[in-house]
View 1 (cartoon, rainbow, N blue to C red):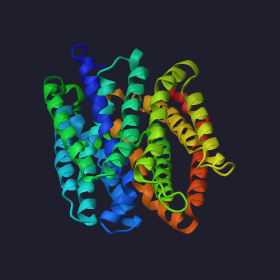
View 2: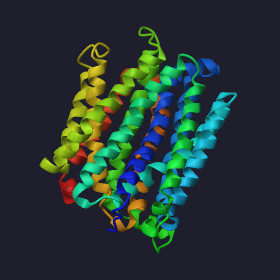
View 3: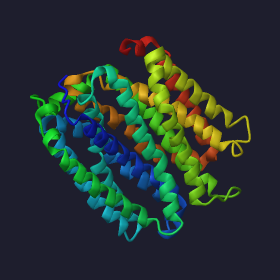
View 4: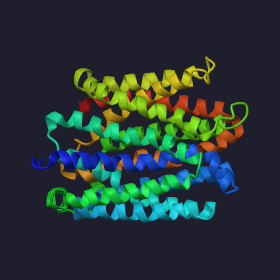
Length: 390
């Protein structure tokens, strides 16, 4: 692996910022569910669609964005993604109705699709193997900070004007574009380029069973997380809870902050007890957490339950990410993008696919679905397959 020593810390910090952006914007709308319904005079169905419509290009385009970067280099791919992300954020600010809002969110997701996988790959290329676990736990911290702070900040703006949240997103985009150009000399090098075609690289990645399995596990974890948050948010704003968006956003943010605390500990656990055991305990904790909703007065203990959920998902997320980034170092961008595409595809489909369950069986039906998915993940990580990547 080629490593550039000079300026490496600023490059890693830039990658952390890029990994923050996508989750920050995608998760924020969860806290705006009730506000958007009122402001646009629309239904939960279309608001949930606005979450899905962001995540569909965010996930699907990632199948290609890493492979494209392996051909054209990091700088061009990131500049393209950030530019589209900025202009689409402005579009969101001025969207006059829910349909324009949905269209703007689609473009925003397209731009963000270049940021997550390329930041993931940059961390792999600009770090040494002996520090890889520590570096990847930092990636988890930044992504989790985006997940946790998005709903909280959006909920705060919702008390006055939710559009101001997306104004702040546009401002952040400009700042990151400036930081990107300061690193153009290093990111413009041939470090990430491959001699093979985009489709050849993709074919190699898609034939790798290890990548597909870990991507599938990421799909299931992200599916249940966004589906759970979306319909927990809607449930808490209705009778008998009647909570405002800021309170709902604070609940959802707790999971992210728990993940922040968990990330360094998880990196240590991976080094001490191994990837398979760490992932197993994460799955067991998540299964226990969802089961407790049926055994206790869950609203009274919601902060604790959501903290447990955030901790357990972080355990599995960091483990899978640490494995994937080293499966094929030569095609790190391609592998990272396929892995991210699969898990964020789960994120994009979660709200819409869970909607019939929510309409038919309410929040308890969503919980049953989450318990089932967690059991499947736990069963897979219990096998010896994960041990091959220790």
